[in-house]
Length: 333
Image 1 (cartoon, rainbow, N blue to C red):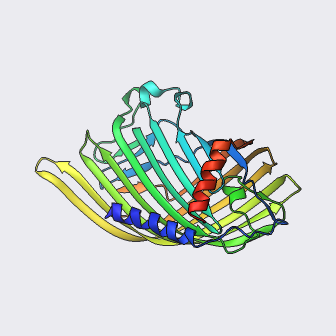
Image 2 (cartoon, one colour):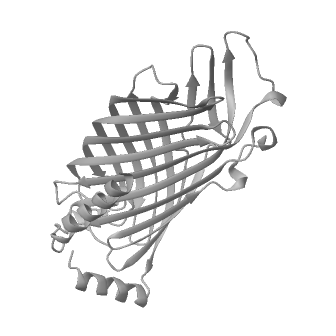
Image 3 (cartoon, rainbow, N blue to C red):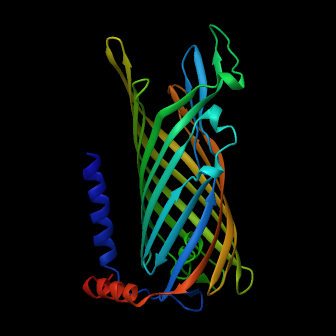
């Protein structure tokens, strides 16, 4: 089922994009960078923790790092991003809390007013914090921290979005591939599909969550002068999540499942510098999600994150230009 949904998303995006002709932006509002290769370095703290709760025991599960780096490359309609958490970003007490390995890969396609994003995230290595046992209260000291080296999470996310205003550049905010020259905003509806797994070989626990959210976003860019800009965005969304939890016990697996309606609001505020060669900026993001309180595993219902980026535009090498010219000639997106 998961493979069928993924294939459908990719095929739907391809046929939708292939029906669009060449961008007909107003160059008074947007300056494109079709012949430039964008390279960007990013630093963010968008790493989620979660909490286990039952009638007796509760505790928080955290990774032993709060920061993640990414390197991305963009040319014309394609962006590739690879992220990881280098060892020097781990907390100094990694001997007590264990090591965390983080990997992310992202591919984004921009075709006229459409945007399609496919992303895979993997995190392995957590530790237990804020442990509470109502039957036998225990307070962990530093030398009593429980490490969960085999606990890992994997997330696949696919998002399809469409902007209505040709004079608004979502690329100028998302990957700085274009430059917004005049103030503009746009309504951007989107559909996001997520598949999440959590497993721990040591304890025999396995959680699978699949969900879909339909969002109605609005973004606006304020051009401060020719090179500086500020951006705002708000994105309320409504969707469903389906949860399956398997727990290994002496007699076999205990299986529990449930589904729930979720409502979330994402917010965005950013400030950046965007010239023909150099670009940099900072963005703050917030997310609030309503979920029921009867789930054993609870994710953060409210959290915020930041992303700091710096990049440079290079003249594209001839082989890259020829390759993309060939693709566009064969498939005139």
